[in-house]
Amino acid sequence: MSLSLPGRVVVFDYGEVISRTPHAARAALLEATGLDADTLFPVYQELRHDLDRGDLTVLAYWRAIAERTGQSWSVTEIHRLWALDFTGWFEVDPEVLALVEELHDNGTRVALLSNAGFDFGDPYRRSPMGSLFETVVVSAEEHVLKPDAAIYHETCTRLGIEPGAMVFVDNRAENAAGADAVSAVGVHFTSAAALRRSLEELAAAA
Image 1 (cartoon, rainbow, N blue to C red):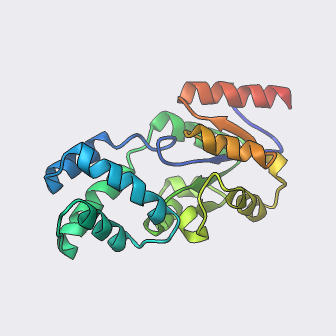
Image 2 (image 1 turned 45 degrees about the horizontal axis):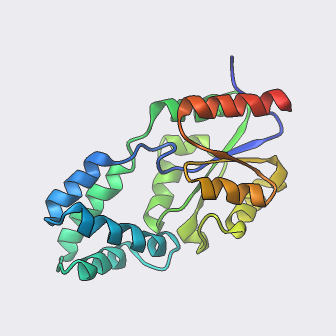
């Protein structure tokens, strides 16, 4: 059955929803830095919030990681680490992206809302995937992170809709709940199959 949600806009998170978890890139980062996972990734994740909020540039983010882990990396070395990390996030789950495309091709409006740094904005918009999205909202560009209500409202404003017309899909339960809190419909993503079932239920109830 072809999936369509007339009168709704389905807004997708990107990381670990459309994209796969970048296990290979994380292994490559450990090898390149010589750090163990318990040293690198807690710092990587903690500082990521500042990167994704737009408070740190990409270069400043990696320099802060170096400082916190007792390393000293040149710009050349940082670029290598950034490239390993960045490209890892662009391995997508074809089943999920095919679902986005199916919605789009059947007339359902789709958009992207991602907690991500400045470096992700153009790739999101200019990649083949970007052709499917009516708008792309990147947290660093707005200087606010999900699940802050402001970023959901900004997304709705760009789309010209009230929050009740938005269905928001995110792998983090707190971000789906943030959409619910502004009167949108939050869907907690666990798998492509479960997402399809949730969207089919919403379509049937319309």
